[in-house]
Image (cartoon, rainbow, N blue to C red):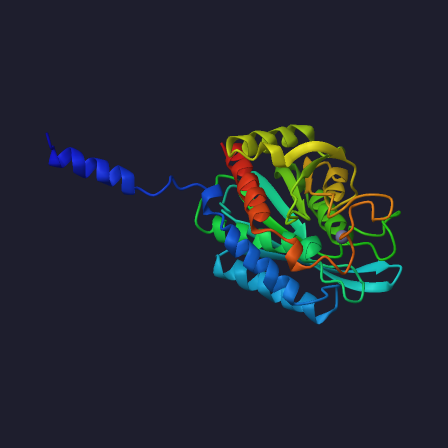
Length: 302
Ligand SMILES: [Zn+2]
């Protein structure tokens, strides 16, 4: 028996595109291309030509995707003297509702002040995954306002002691606290060093555990459970500025970059080393983290 109308219906079902969703709108190949482009700008410490090129690219991608842009520019007092700092925030799905909840996805775009250091993973991967989030958010609506934040001068000038480091995030979090917007922020995810080929996102112990659970659930539903929270870590990173301001926050960080051991940096052999180059970055890792984080946003948006 052959029923042409049934056959047609079946053919339409088979041809139907995958259900549209925010996480399916994430393009890992493009995220990798952005990482290579940003790493190709070279050193990106505040004031360097590579830093300016990165700012230009972020603004260009945000404008192309129709985001509202908030610039947070200020002068930081550092052990190196005054430094001009430029945080960039791109806002998606902004409605007229003054109580619309806000969720922030962030990553730092500066690199260490170190000759020859280009930070393909530490700096470029977080910059790039946010650029790909911008591309995805332009395609798919959310109820919450989603802010993508490129933090500046995350890296310490000397070491993460006292107020050295986290300059951009601290300034912006305190600004939110000061003008009352912090009460609308449901959460903050920081992405850092998530391009590592040997991906293992640790359970950062100062982060908000309820949000860890949401990420865990979102990862498992995509079959990515094994890449998340298999071990604990204790990291000072931009999420600290938001936790200090009373905002729930998670550091989504792979804190083991290359071989570990007494002869290496505490975060692995390629951490803050000039060997942090594009060959250490994996398209698949960017895709796993990107899809998981956007899937988490979908869960939280319900
Ligand atoms: Zn770093």
